[in-house]
Length: 304
Image 1 (cartoon, rainbow, N blue to C red):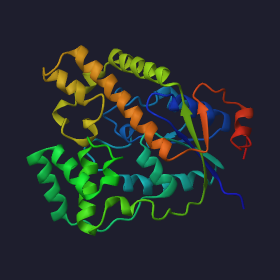
Image 2: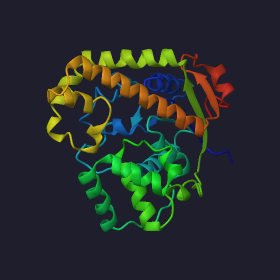
Image 3: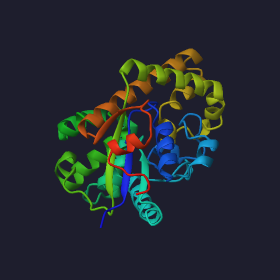
């Protein structure tokens, strides 16, 4: 029996995954699962570039603004809920679309999370206190010492991931990287992964233009309404932390906007590097015409 197919749309931020996936969903008459962790939160709209109400009215989306920034929501929680939803939707659709954005969350759906040793609260608290007392550079230094392999590829400015890796190293008495990719979970579906690509200069222009558009749409007011919650993890992301600095008079507005553009470009670069290490089945220009000919290229027959 042929397994149902999950088409995964990968690509760096701002490349056009939302538009591409909606066009593909229209053609296939199917629904979209989002794995963009920033778009989970209902309080964040402009800075996360969530699909518009009109786009969501046309095509059913799942895991968009379904949580509050005040709720704890892990990649493990997402994996469990997403797999349950996907298996349910496959009862009426043979093809679904998963739109990336957060590579780790996308990976959890495709392959499942790696199994790690149980971590005591004492260990986690130790590293959290170390971060609060000595800052992120101390965490970076320790991870470089204990697991240089993971140090080379992790986002070194993400203290949550550094604390997680160091906690695993301590609890299991071996490197965090040694736990990665040991086994993949069996899924009831097949995946077809598509990576959207553009020349770098065009991608960077799209990033800069999107940031300008966010400012016009009211990003500053959105961030202002959330300033008392700025220490929550979802609000430590690009587009929010830079505006907080402006609102606290640490930098001016022009500097804040330029920082968002720079940090978004850096994020895109990291995402591209991750995708190079986790290649998709197809690389497709983001402006590719999505029609029946395209479906044949990726091995999908309309109506299957």
